[in-house]
Length: 530
Image 1 (spheres, rainbow, N blue to C red):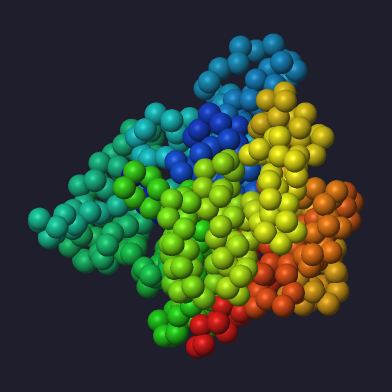
Image 2: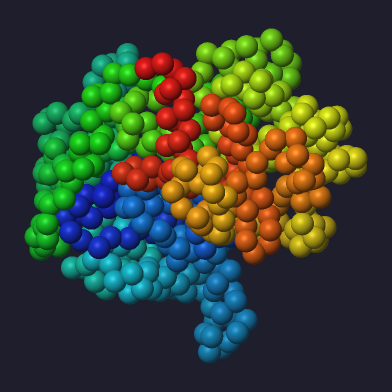
């Protein structure tokens, strides 16, 4: 089933192997016809993660970068759409020498070519490949075919791991292995026999369940790895090693550990050691999927909060605050006072925007620590222009193209993209430099004069209003040196009020939290009085 944890499983295996001294990289395969994840709805698909080179990817790429503490590239991500597009372009360029180009073998061959390219380019000992979707569905069959072909050519170099869920129905009270048996048979029908089965479940597997899976799925019992629910995804590598997963993998390939270096990870993520909490509210709109809350829309923000909290020995308590509720009931803004800090993350469109602006005004007036990200920065500029500078109709041209005070506007090259409906991979994407002004909150947090941060947006702060905003007290502490674009704004004489045009959450790591999140959480902890 989807959402079972293939991404964090892949990332966790990578972390384990890296701590044993191996060079590891990871590749995500998405079965969608979309060429990349940039045009996907975050409510349906979750967050769009942006790589340093500007590629818009599935959120699992974020987990790979965080767990492996590495920077991945476009080569580490592929979709059905990108594969077909590449094959069609090659056919148009006569790179197949006039042959009849077919779904099989040419599509699987392009997949294999890309995997081997990543292996060579990164000189990796292990390439971890996550095939998206579920066992037996039609969308990923071509990728399973590529996997089968690769194993047939290099049997000593390829191992298959199935991540499968074992439900425990409440009315029965017994863990059931039948879905995993069916999943294994579906993979068998594609010519793939799992070498290892990661058994996801609400509780740890017992011996009878392991024996049953071993018998009916044709794997050794020691290759059935228990993967019960845990409080934090960063405990997953620790949990896997209770069942000796690394030993099983290395035995499969005839390898021995090169070193053992997982002490810092184990130490950091024993989160039960942190009795003190810090309460953070996230004001956004990508929360609801029917009757359920979809936190995946902001997964990198959530993880960046956790990284900073764990480093500061605090346990985060995160609440979702729907910005639309502040529009319908302004009295509800009072609840913002109960939080130690508020984050307004990125987003697009008009829904909930006035609620965000009202929230920022309340946060500014009541000295609540605030961190704005991308759209959050733009709304902070609009709020300041309206309520401090006195430009009552100030707005972003994304929402009101006719506003008399376009505090946020679109650059000419982006306007051309929108006019021509050139939406895919056309935003300001990836890493850009940011020069930091000295004696500012941002400079003190980074302890650097220049940094590089990742972007994903079309609209910018309008430089025609910079002097007016600065004269009223707004500080522009980070600027792109190449295009003179505002990257960071902040307010002095406030416990913490800082907002960025970029997405700092994309470069936070479990053992190296992002400096801005660290500074924000320090201010939040100070407010909490703990």
